[in-house]
Image 1 (cartoon, helix red, strand yellow):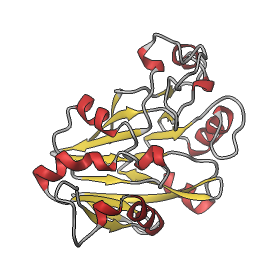
Image 2: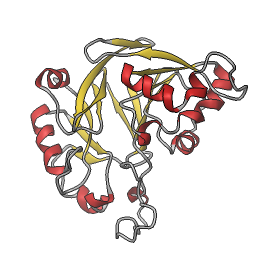
Image 3: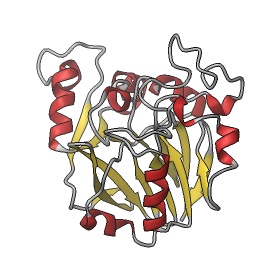
Image 4: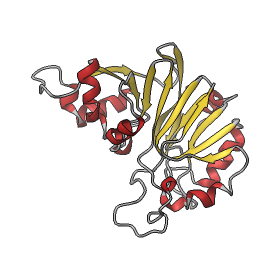
Length: 256
């Protein structure tokens, strides 16, 4: 059994959007307040996160996470990586923090956060990482769990999703190839992005997300990476099919 905590369920700007007077951004419902998308995955004594965006520090404090075994990166965009410097408290207590990403993502992080990856003349206060390069069709391990990478397309950009036991996490999806779709067979819990009502060039909209859910047939689905343009949490939740839910920040669920 694994525990999944939604650290953030918002799209790249979060909700509320800076300077916006959109009704959803003005909502007083806590479920309409969304940090950038990330999840904390826990089993036994293990703590892993998928992505660490600009809200990572706040998310770790809210979750009460005092130990971090590693970070899995879906892709290199800032809303999924910009919080990497805030691994420092974990690094000071634990040493180098394991990170997992494709070669392209690791190279991008090395360029943008060179002081973290530098091996000579390091700044004394900089964190350090243990690099683990992953490939779309190669299973890897986290502690005693086997992790199945699932490649999806974010328009033209390959993005990694992950399957841990029967829990599957996919974000920033616009399309997915048949061979990768097959990795989702017999999925119990699916987390999937659903950006907004209108079509978008790089993300599934609500209609497309629901079509993909109908194709995969998971037992439960939780939508994440949500824009204010999807609407109010309470209103839309009442319109979704059975066993399809809008995730919200701090939601905790369990999967086998």
